[in-house]
Structure formats: structure tokens, C-alpha cells
Amino acid sequence: MDLANTTPLTAQLLVGQTDDPDLRAGCLVAKATYRFNNNGDLLMDLERPAPVLIADQETPLGLLPRDDLLFCQQHLEVILLGSAKAPGGARQLEVALTVDDQRRTLCVSGDRFWEPATGRATEAAPFASMPLTWERAFGGAQETWLTADSSVDVPHALNPAGRGFDPEPLIRGLTRGIYTADTYPRWDRLRPLPNVEAPGRQVTSPDDDPPPTCWAPAPLDSALFLARLGGVVQDQGQDVQPPDTAALAARAMHPEVLHRAHPTWVIPPPPARGTAVIMEGLTAWGRAAFTLPSPRLACDWRLGDHVGQRTLHLARLVLLPDEARFYLVYFCRFTYRRKPGQTRALRLRLES
Image (cartoon, rainbow, N blue to C red; front, top):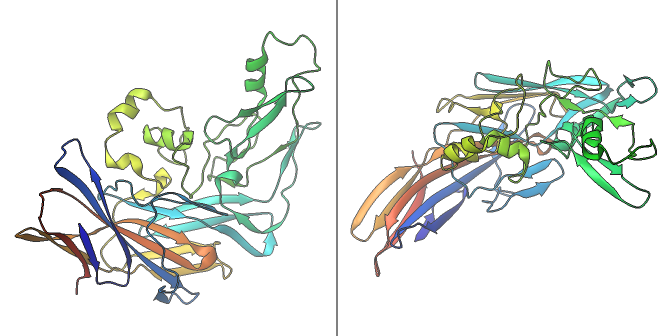
């Protein structure tokens, strides 16, 4: 199937086979990239348009999610890859993101540690910029020495990339009945605490185990993604439990399960026009606000002698405040019967 793109957006037509050898499943994906400034002005970024991704792209601030998975048109997912900004320096601050009538906050702290001798946390170190990544959220993996020559990593179940969890219960369970002296197992008792936490769920005790929180996508192979897929991660105020296999099976074919945003940022579609986006503490100038652009995209299709039109749906907003950029992802899913010699074509266009 041929695609003619008559817009300034990046676009790609993705087509795959189905169980029926003559039936094809397709998805047309288009991305609109914009720059913004501290006055709220927007300009379409034609010099560095975001490409359509068929694999996650690693960045210093997290993963840019792939665009070739199913989308659910009943929701908009909001993703932010950025840093908390404190130009004058801060030990703690709160950052906020608002999209339409949806507002979320994160509590951000400078580097802190549990002191083994006192059982208390050190004072947060001042910072000017703090990455809002899963590596800075609650979790972690503790290298544990079983002998002088061998060690294993003991990870947090949901976020081994993070920091702050207490590995001792896991280590004791793992090595119960093996050691009779205190020589082993050994591990570093100086624990770094998370920098990025959910409001009201901050770590205040060495044995606290809050759900990890971050606005960047979790890797597809991580337990964080599987737990969300199982429907057990609901909001910032609820605990996260390991995924239920029956729930996974029941939901496995529903397009909702492939959302990559944090569950609190899978929101109802905003109005077609006039949607406000406000970022607080996420840019060098403190507060960034703009109105989300609302291009209307359509595709005209031809299959042999048959023609028609489909509308593309807004599926994803990806904010990159460190770059003063963002992009919108639109999609249209369809199926068609493949016949030899048949003309098959799509034309992407902007509606007036």
C-alpha cells in the first residue's frame, strides 16, 4: 500500500499480516513536532521533526516510546521526559503538569541517604537540575556478596533501576539457613533515597515501600509495565502489587494495555481546541504555558475501485521541556483485503 503525505508532519504507514492470509491490518501514524518559548508561542519544528519510531529510543531522560503498537482512541496518554529545575538551587521542590483539567505533581529532593549508624536520612543536597527518571524513583538493586568471590544483585520487584528500597528482607529470605555467622551475606548499608516521589507517599522510614512514580515510559519488559498491564497500578496513592496472570490474559488483546504513560496520565481526550498545557518547575524560566495545537488530520484511501476517508485520532502527547519541544502522535487503524493487481493507496492531508 502506497502513502502520499501532503502535510508537513512525519508519517509512516505500518502494515502487518493477520491469521487470515488475505487480510491485512494497518495503522497510519503521524507526528507533529513543535517548539515553545516562555511567552507561550508555538512554532512547528520542521528542522528536527520527531520521527515515527518502531523501537523505543533511549535518551538521558528515559525512553521515547515506539509508535508501532496499538493505540486506544478513548484516551490520551501524556508522557514527560524532563528535569526538575531550580536555577537558584533547592533541596526540595514540587513540580507540576497540567493538561486541560488534569493536574499532577511530583515531589523532588536532592540526594539523600539512610545513615546505617543512626537510622536517619541525611539532609537533601541542593540541586539545580534533577532528572525525572525511573533511576531516580523508588526501587533499586543491591549487590550482595555471598562469599569473598561471588555476588548477586537483589532487585526491587517493580523498579530495579531506582533507589531507596530496603533489600535486607529479601537478602535474609534468600540466604536463610545458609549462613551461621555474620560474615556473609554482605552489602552496602548506605542507601541512597529516591529523588522523585509521589505526593503523600514520600519515604520517611527505612522500611517504607511506596509505589515507584515517574512520568517517563517504563520499558516494555519491566515489571512496572507488566503491573500496569495487569490493571493493578491505578494512581499515585495506591500500592502496587505483582501482576495477576489471569488479569494479564484477560486484558492481553485490549489496546489499552499498550499505553506507555504512567497510569495517572492516561486521561480522557481533551477538547478539540483550546487545551491548556502548563508545566511548573520543569523549565529554566520556571513556568511554561501554551495552548495545545489542534491540527485535524484525515486520510483518503483507495482499494481498487473503492474510495473513502478516515479521520486520525490524537493518541499521545510527549513533552520534552529540557528541549522546549513536544510532539503529538496521531493514528488511524484499519484492515483490508489484499487482492492481486489491486490499487492500494492512502493520502494523508490536513483538513481545513
